Image 1 (cartoon, rainbow, N blue to C red):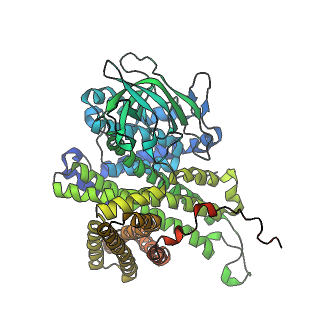
Image 2 (tube, rainbow, N blue to C red):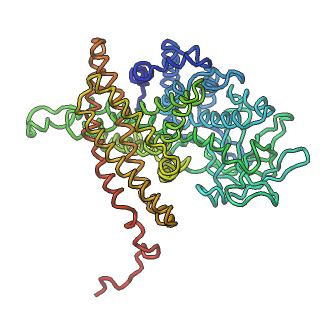
Image 3 (cartoon, helix red, strand yellow):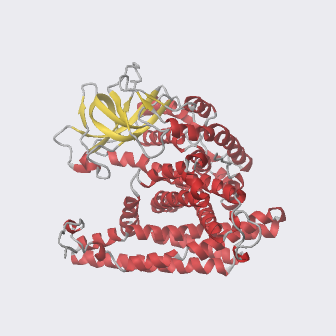
Length: 611
């Protein structure tokens, strides 16, 4: 049977020793944040994740959600309702929410650590409150005072939940193709009609009301075509003023590869009553509040799954006895498989990736807190630029590696990883969706290279931060064997970036933007992978810096800090060299991708080899 133990030592190291999150107490809204408070929340959340949520994970996968075709209701797996009630009573639903509406007002940096534990313990369960928080943020930023007072207290308490309704059968990424229509009513509300698919937590039995945030086009001659004509609406399952059932229902739930404990619904709106959120035809601006948070949240899902898969693979490797040591040439007693080099390669690759990603997730969440709350405008702007640049990295890299890491964990188990008994195959199935929703990873690459790097030119501000951290680490005595590989990887990144920027400038001047756009799109995935490796390497330098300093002052933690430095060395020597191949692939351009005509991909010839 699988197990999970929250990695509290590593979380405390990152939050309290590397990032000093307690420094946020200088901001008025976070005045109560200190190390004891952070540690208390970590410990209490760990108990819930380990003892309440994780035991329901396998059961939720086996049992799944059940849709009643007659009542249109959805029943969640056994134990979910009771766990959700306990979750709400703990205050977790409002942990990082505005105290004005009943929240605790705690930093995102700490909330990220708590969310990671929920993702590790039970991803399908964690999606229910996770989507609610996204709906809360969109309404908090763009809702009217009446909307805020009506919906936010209930969303914060967890009495109501929220969804985001974007995708339709004919459109996924291209939301300009949506057909859901909104007709204005005499009372100022709108009647929405259309079908949305892949709606996570669209219908369930955990809360008394479900608040849908829905993209639609207003039926009006002045509505612009395409994505410019999209508006955002709040559509409750039950109308708040009368508690009457709205005309929105679940047509079916998807039969999915994973996350069976979360209801992924087809939602039908048949003249459902809703209210405009924000400005008409400006819905994407408001929805991006939810989408950007969701992208960070999906990245955490990847991190959480990688962590729990690693823990179980490690436990198995420490216990499973197979074969004599390789240097004994088949002679002598068998040893546990962690003594075999290739098993160590699998485990260290997961370990180095997970710990580097955790550092990045918490560091970027700290930047998010600063960007929203810091009284210094320059500090806010600097932090926002980092969040904007690296959000696609969190989403894409963390989820790519989740699929790889859960796959590697299965490999450590051998044949035992392929069967349900050990739970590893569930982690892999659950991880696979993370590369797809909230914008596929290819879309994240396009966003990164097209908008964040070429259009907004955000990379160089980040590189200045990286350079300052490297200089600091060098002064503190961090080994050159850690610094030099990262510096070389940064050179590769800068070379391909400057080349892309030069090509884009030439194309703009010459008026030949079409080929340049294809070129950038063709290398977008390789580029985000290259930048991801560099950014995680940067995080390892920050951790190695702190560990080096701590080794001089804290002999009690010697084993922990020395292991950090050794893991950093593994990352620099075994994983970061991938940047060389990626940079070479980027430099070759995208022409080779477009050489074969679309109609030549299929094997249509019948004469080849016939004679």
